[in-house]
Length: 271
Picture 1 (cartoon, rainbow, N blue to C red):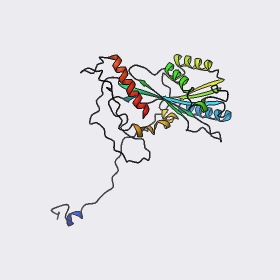
Picture 2: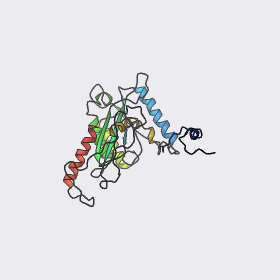
Picture 3: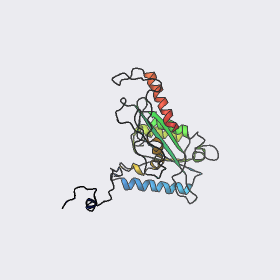
Picture 4: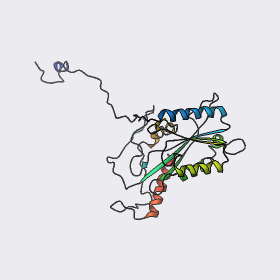
């Protein structure tokens, strides 16, 4: 006979607690490409070459454009799978409507890597992040060249980018993802690389491209994982100096729009 209530003594005999683990969608499915093994082997050989010459001659740099950060919406809705103290509370808005088209910031990340005493290429080193407006400025070969000119002059990159004489190290190795603004097979990117080679009087310049679908193995990806901790719940303001949008979401004041974008970029850089 069935009991009258499930919470009674007889009813609890028919209740069995089963441990259930909720699963969420994962984004670790990497596409296979016919050039994947060739690209991986090439990068591995370049690491061996860097270990032969050492830190005195080699400047190893990994670069990539990260996911665009929207304005007026949470910069990061999830955290990286790391051990953290959950002594804070993240509050997110109850909607995810875009403020206006192309109201986003594009961070370009450059990660320098150092060789260990054993000659192995490590993942530690200084990191430079250039933040651009996705509406007023595009990521191109020229913009990456300007970023390189800035980072080699920074004090944080002095040890990894310059030799004892103060010049840029003669061997430069750059790993990219293969986008149109980074892949050397495109004419504009090739021209920018030639100018870089001549400007800094390099002995060798290697630009290595990961195969399509294999960008997760780029070293710069490891530098960006801890940033989700600081960006979780962060909402960049789009109207710090006043709204530059009309009721339909169109821009009615371009100068005010640029000021708001600049302020949002400063807030993102301070995080």
